[in-house]
Image (cartoon, rainbow, N blue to C red):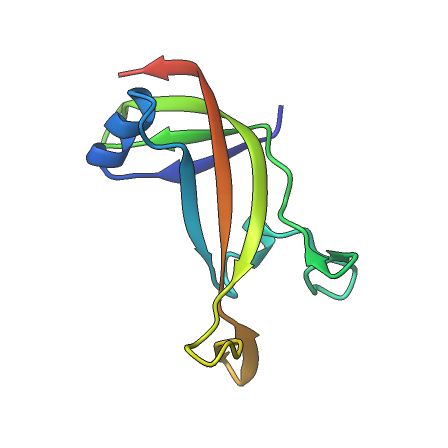
Amino acid sequence: MNILTLSIKQKFFDEILAGKKKQEFREIRPNSQKKYCELDEEGYVKEVDGVLQPRKYDAIKFLTGEYKGTRPYAIVEVTGAKIELFEDENHELITYQDQGEEYVAAQVVYDLGKVIERNV
């Protein structure tokens, strides 16, 4: 099973366990691109029929609480994922510079399913 590990605030952790929060959103930055996106041999995000491809995960392990000792966690099924690009009010892609290279502002959206395991 391919599991992504993410830290999350207690409020959102509780909402996921209660079944109220059905999606998790993460901004894609240059330093997190390989964590959230399928990359080709040259390090660019793979596209299939013009659609950017998120990295495939079976589940997300959400951790909350202090970084000391054992932290409460929940492993939650991922039922789907997509990459969304950010646009301005004129529907132009929003870009930014990082270390001299231009990037498009984007986020990955994970659809959450059932809680597989919990330790709270």
